[in-house]
Length: 272
Image (tube, rainbow, N blue to C red; front, side, top):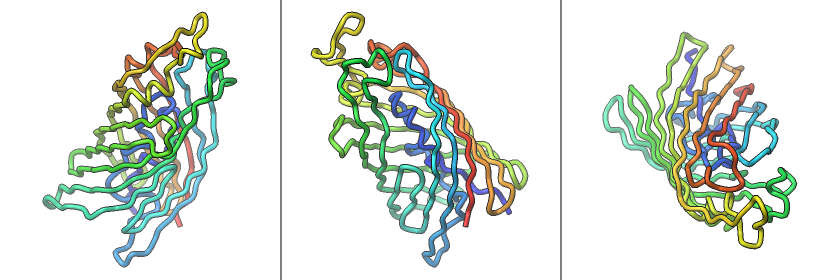
């Protein structure tokens, strides 16, 4: 049985979002089938369960690397696709020709960005910054050579009141019946409200060594690769590695001492 395509949305990637980059769980969903199998034309639902571990480094000064267990759940049919923290409500696709198609969807997800003041010394006496729910729209262009995706999301929970736009390019190579690798390039634009909320310093929070800082909009870029080894039609091991170059508007924050962040994910999934 050929290896199915692996959606990036299975990798919750909170590190990327906390670092103001979000390609692991934002919009670079592979446009073909997933490990749960292609939804049947009769409208039946396929699903899969799994467990993984995410190791991630946030950009805040002297913050510890975080290793987090990640439960995986996928549910898909012709109307919805739920995987990780994101759910997509599918809209009608447009077939350009036999090898090209445009896919559209309405998406919603939970973003785990944010921090508590005890997470690092630089955050002492800072007000907590919370994650929240985001919603928006996405479009994917499939072709035989590569896939291009674009997604716009806004913070509907009202914490940051921010917006972001993700643009990605990827190509999948399949090696035999078992191995798949998908290198990717991506860019994420965050508006000034998002960057100011998560990386800004309010006048009331300023102190020696942490001056007030008002964030502006910026673009971060990412290089990554995801893949899988499928033992059979039920069992698969997943992996993802990414390195993110932070926007200057994030690197200039007095809360940040890194120009890049990184994340590694390894997991297992069982398709029913």
